[in-house]
Image: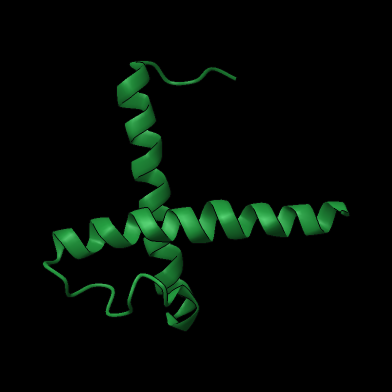
Length: 76
């Protein structure tokens, strides 16, 4: 498996799948089911910018949850 295939697989799974699922649940809960209009399995049918926003919200929630549970921010 080449590096470009690995990068695509990581992006697809970590950002699109996990980020979308967590962000979709959060957005649907906060907007009482109005945003995003697509179902959780329809990430490919969503507008690219809207999908990106939902994915970023999901990844931010994951990062904040890890921060809260570990009580410290990772040091580089």
